[in-house]
Image 1 (spheres, rainbow, N blue to C red):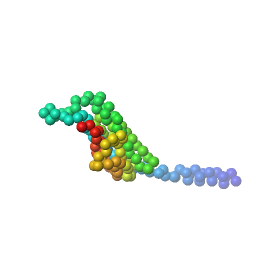
Image 2 (image 1 turned 90 degrees about the vertical axis):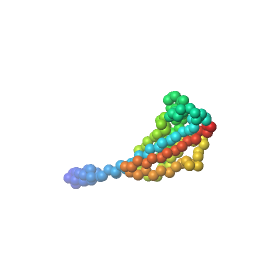
Image 3 (image 1 turned 180 degrees about the vertical axis):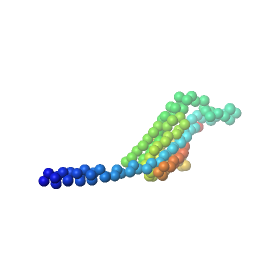
Image 4 (image 1 turned 135 degrees about the vertical axis):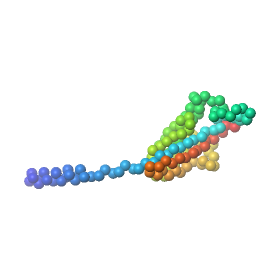
Length: 137
């Protein structure tokens, strides 16, 4: 009887060792570039053109862009990140189709009606550009 019990335990142990783990889902990268603007009213065209025509400090730009976050959703899964001053965020996501939006978006434009659909393919990078209108004129 003890031998039968030991053989059963041995078979159970061996059987559990041969179980393969489920493969991890393959992922891809989503890179979202968000442009927020205009950040100031009408700029005199006779002034020199610069990367910062409004004369905002880095802290001001950080504060403006820090108000926004990119939200990626699929079913019950939700991923979100705040933007850096360049308006760029990146996500590693399982391959699938997702909806993407920026919050807040007080003045959505017809070109970027949200949410936007994006397909993530395994081992590939998908890029998405979103323009946010601030309403400043």
